[in-house]
Length: 399
Image (cartoon, rainbow, N blue to C red; front, side, top):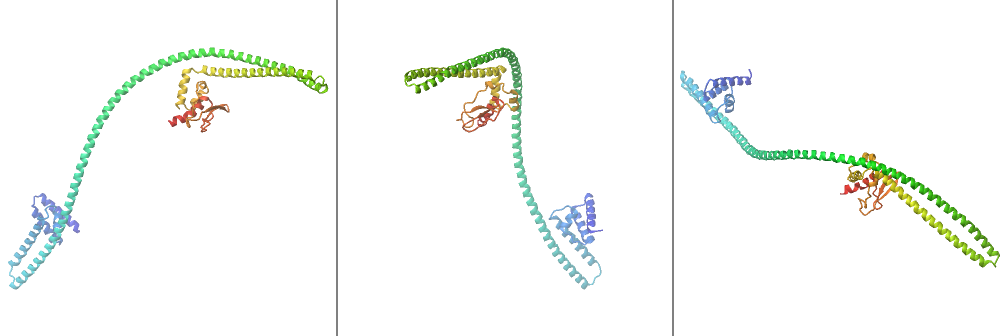
């Protein structure tokens, strides 16, 4: 059996004795006896305390001293009971005295060591106690802060509950308002649908009227073109003989000196007639140019009327407002095409440089808006609406 096994056996015996009601001192004496006689170990406070698991740092040394006194008393009684010669008894007494003194010195040294160990244990316990006190104070402060945060959290919870109740009430009110608004919008949508049908019928009549005007305009343009052509031919017909006659008169003037005065007068008359013919030709050309401008203006007006007839003005205004606000994407512009171009107004200034006056041009069958000052450009778009909206997007970003 090893030393550890023997220690465990002794500890088990002491536990059973303790359970049986043995006193603390008796347990300590029993532990000293087993250590000294069975294990050959000098009893110490740490060894006894390890086996008995009871006793204080001041009680166990007293129990060990009591154990040694009992050992001395037992040895003294055995020596004095026999017939021992006086010299041997004296020597035995001296030897026992020396052993006692040596044991006492060793016991004191062991006691000092155990005292130092106990003092170190006390100091360590005091240090742990101070740390525990510090931790307790910190825990108390943390608990106070936690309580404060908990109170604040409960107050915030109550506030949030009140806000939630108010939000639920506002949500219910908003829901009622939303239902009323939806009903109103449905009624307005029905009215708009009726007006749209009326506008479609009116636009159909207007389209027929535009077709008639266009046919009349075409006939007038053809008639004006024929008249202009006839006038030009008449002017050429009258001017050419005059020029021929003028040439002949000039040749005759060089040959016949006598007829210079008459030829000069005829030449002057011919020149006046030629000037009158040229003036008439200029007037006819100006009239042709004016009529051409009128035809172009009528064409533009017809195109605008056709575009305006396709979309109601109110709907076009809404679409133009959405485009200026940047709420239409490319697919929306592609769907609308040029239906709303007649209602699109050109901006008076560039959204980037402010001073520039933008210009709208037709490029490759599309529209492009450009600022001549800062070269800000919308890019080529399929419709005037998309070009102007893309050009004005810089204004929304700048604001």
